[in-house]
Image (cartoon, rainbow, N blue to C red; front, side):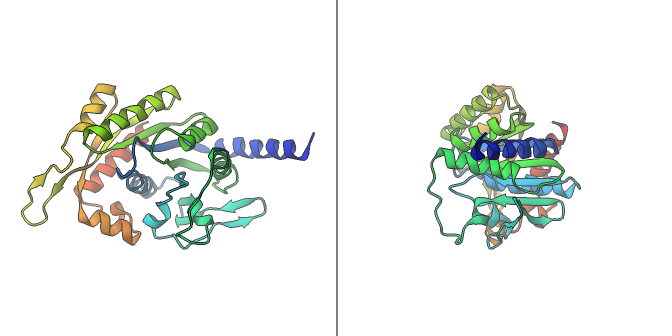
Amino acid sequence: MSTQEEQKQQQEARLQEQLEQIKHTLVVMSGKGGVGKSTVTTNVAVALAQRNYKVGLIDADIHGPNIPKMFGIERSQLMSTGNKFKPVMYYPNLKLVSVALLLQSTDEAVIWRGPLKHSLIRQFLSDIQWGQLDYLVVDLPPGTGDEPLSVAQTIKRVSGAIIVTTPQDVAVLDAKKTATFAVKLNMPIIGIVENMSGFICPHCGKLTDIFKSGGGEKAAEELGVPFLGKIPFDPQMVDLCDAGKPYIEKLPNSEIAQVFAQIADQCEQG
């Protein structure tokens, strides 16, 4: 047997050993970019960790890794220990990994084709010291391309998919395609979240539907999957994301935080 074949067998053994220590694997998906998928991922992961679950978070958006920024850890680096890497700790029970934590600069672009991305995702699953986890949450890039397919084929038994959309027809159309992708790959759909669902004026309190409203709820009804809630525009969300402070952590009693809590409830039930 060649050295390369031995290395592949060893990595496969490490992968299976790690997957056996993970109780539930969740993926957060979207049909198109810019719908707030990473924001949902961040806050759901924090919500689960706040319930004393052991949570791991993989930023699988290799070309646009935003998770470290949202946790305020973008200047951290993954440290190697032998043939494995230590994830970055946010809470003692919330561990994070992202390609951004391997780069020398936050401005560095990752210019990779499919095989390299597939290899990195496998390494994120097999060569990170995750230990035992109650939940592994994976933030996927938009669409149904290389990274989502690699995650689904590598994990094989994904516990559930959360689909994020905005209300307008184009985003909802893409969300339906994402749902079809999940079904074809045997990933149960936890539900659909409608983000950017109206703007509440901080001065008069009036709700304005900038991108229409109800598209995500209608898509969930047509697909026969749960609707997880609407998240309106909130300027504080932008400020907190830019500051690296999860919204649910800083404003736990807000209406939006309750939506993230409802999503965590569905993850627990799933």
